[in-house]
Image 1 (tube, rainbow, N blue to C red):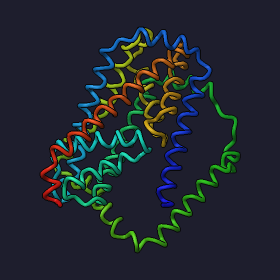
Image 2: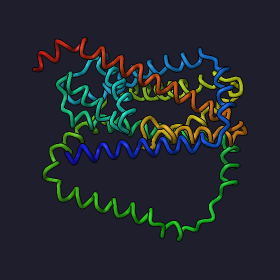
Image 3: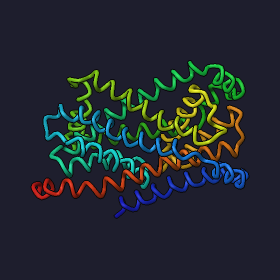
Image 4: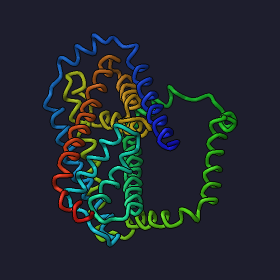
Length: 325
């Protein structure tokens, strides 16, 4: 009961933070100007973005499957892998980060794969994506150095290292880390088997037989992620002249925004992309319309594919569920 209440409170707090930031970003804008921009949308690029999102689900499923094969348990079908990805993103719209658990739960429901081991493979996959984000960010900064150097020059912090070190946030973070370490030591024996299974899942990334295919799929996935964002710049006349480098900069800022523990990145994503566009010299209302539409299309894709997965999965896997029971 207490656990459910805590989860509900965390979900509501995350949603509230996102909504407040969203309101803060748009409250000062001329909404009539945003509406005018919305009237002149080109819809084909947005449709193409949804198609690319659908393809990315399939490729992501194929890549994750490569991590599951070395577990020597039942290997899920390509259909299940794709549906799991769809269900996961859909779940993230309800509870932040719940999608990672949901897609593991989906696979363990329809296939005989240990849940904790699936968690491990998911962690390995997300670490791969984190590495990709770091590489993309460094590459973007290198390609758009003039833009970033201007930003850093205009936003130099006068806060000294000692002031930062004495910040309550720093000491609070250190305290949290210490508490987590103590809890880990105290409860280690109770969670040892679960941790071992998770590690067996994580280490599959080192046991891959098709490492180059895994790497190629990772590159393709992030090309698709960037592609489904980039095509959206052609939905508006004012943004259609953005360069690849500028579009990549906005994409990276959006990735940083989506990392915030808020449902669907609502609020933080808008703030980061609007900030990027205004820094590049675009009007705030134009930036607001762009962020509203591009993020909205992504959410529509999550909902469409998520509902599709929830409808098709029980039908396609009906026999398997009956056999498991």
